[in-house]
Image (cartoon, rainbow, N blue to C red; front, side, top):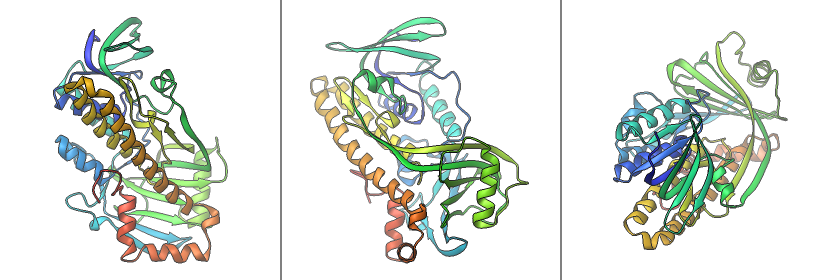
Length: 386
């Protein structure tokens, strides 16, 4: 059942929407999450949780829930073609989170969903198809269908967390500036048949990047750069590229998921309109190389929750609070996009020169290695501390 009224309506129940809901509920603000999907998508998608996000989870009191399910990556090993050229240790990160936590996105969503449901059994509504969103003088009116029945919900404020094709953003006529990059990848999750253990490995290869990340339960993710967007046979191509470039065979290894994807970068021209805010992929999309997109969504959701709380307490200054959120989070998103571009650029064929190799060697040594760890783990973004 969907209530008739609430403080905040959240359209979209992915990682950003669920985290926003949990934080609002902790602040004593009622909310309803309207999620179109009836079940959690078990496709792995995003994998890494960065230290800045773990610090947010510390504040929310939920970090242990993720630590119980995740795997700590404390070191990354860099190769030039097949030759090891150095490594980066996340032990230089501030305590206590001196690692990147690997956990499949579907598990992340399950944890957040359970957290929200424990705080309010009515907060999350699945199968809710939002078809109209209108702003009135003192509320937001949302209507649609849930389980073949119409619903209407009135909220003081609303947040669009409904992904890169956001219905909320389109309803507000907010431009989504940006576009695709000329970069394509194949990704697959396998049983781990390497000797890397809990270490990540990145191969900067003259024929294209290969990344290899450990996952919980003895699994490992492989990401391979390709020259075009392949549709099939994805598994066979992944086997072929990994074997040819680095001499490692996955052919007799059990696999759990394969997919191919292109890369985009977008940023909404503003992250609010009237009483409605945007966060997560509805607000910004960055390259997934470096694993910063989902974490960027959580940083935004935290700021969003802070400013919604301010607006609930002082409705007359709501626009000032929302504008502050928009300016701050857009700045953070631009910085994150540049860092993701750097990660992606290093994996392109044109970067496989002696000059780039020298530069990478320098970045893997102190004092630049500490800077690289800070950049990779999303330190120094906007208001967030270095």
